[in-house]
Amino acid sequence: MPSNVKSLVDQAKILFDESFGKDDGTSNNVSHYCVSAPGRVNLIGEHTDYTGGYVLPLAIGYNTVGYGRGRIVKKTDSLESNRCRVVSKNKPVVEFNASPSLEPSTGSSKWVNYVQGVILQYLPDLKEDEAITFDLAIVGDVPLGSGLSSSASLEVATAVFLESILDDHGVAYRSSKDGPMSEKQRKMERAVRCKLAENTFCGVPCGIMDQFVSSAGCEDKLLLLDCQSLEYREVAMGGNKSDAPVLVITNSNVKHDLGDGEYPIRVKQCKEATDILTKSNPSIQSLRDATMNDVETASHAASLEGVLLQRARHVVSENERTVKTADALEKGDWDTVGTLMNESHSSMRDDYEVSCEEIDVLVDLAQNFDGVYGSRLTGGGFGGCTVTLVKKDASKELMEYLKKQYESKTGTNCVCFETSPADGANKIDL
Image (cartoon, rainbow, N blue to C red; front, top):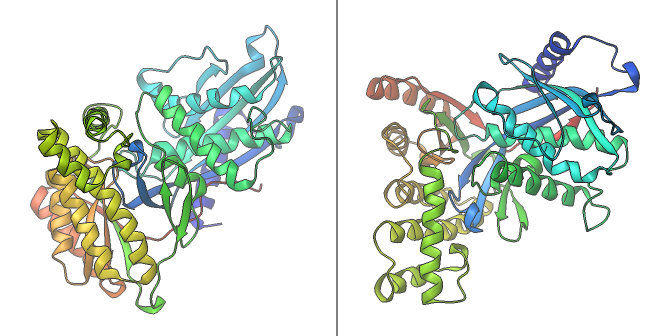
């Protein structure tokens, strides 16, 4: 177990004991469970997942850990039968009843919606006379609002916790129409449920990338995910291992909220651009189906222009870049990977308009640093992090350079760290 995960487990146990009382782990025949789910970095393929496109993310070694107890009980008229209590570090305990009529929380308890929304996705696995009750303590080290998917990490950790309870009663995924599931199928279904939770309960019109890689991530491999079919392939960095570059993540410490503002607007604009393209070519049902020739044709023969043209141009070209990047990674063609990353950032900045001054400063500093192949904004945008592919022997010097120059240019401190692909969510043996 990685040292940071072990530390999070210890913190979660302490928080649990402080919030819900200490016991020996078997009181009243209620089992205890511990789970972990990682955040993620997307190497390339930004704002393509909610239009069924391609993405190339990796799970990272920053996680959300949950420790708790729970069981399936017979439903009664008592509110105790489906009482759930959740606590997070520096947050008060939130108590609610796990029922289909559950309403989103507001105010300081709004974060719990990411837990509650997932619960609603698993309630159909229970029989009509069954209820779930649990106490859960949550801690994590995924930086909040950084574009590293702390919300998806929380959702997937919650899902694995619920599955652990349901598995002990033989009812996990009982509502699935496909019958018994393989582990791979479980990971996919878990991601689908977590995405639906964020879409329907949290009000964020996100795609499936974040939840998918948190659920199905693989050590030393990136995932080239087709967000339309959910088929994916594991992509290893090829070439000579001794000369392999590393990935440096830089947190701008400019935070954003994907549930508000510009993100939903981009989703709407993509839908409008798709409608125009469909009129020009009926075989196009999403931007995933379009080519750059289709975009060019519609910009002349149809009314695809202005902002909608820009949005379509980014998504369609980003899909092409993502597939090319996966192929170049496997060949160890770092120059090509870097060029595609740089092109991606320009597209996000100019056509999709989701970058910001601080992010552009970081990217410009990195792209012009000796030993760097490419650098770009990663995540939803409007702040967050950059991802940079850099020669291993230049990594440390790059991070020091970015910290110094970024503070000089913006007055804000940034945080840098190396990362590599990590495993996805798992249940931790106690």
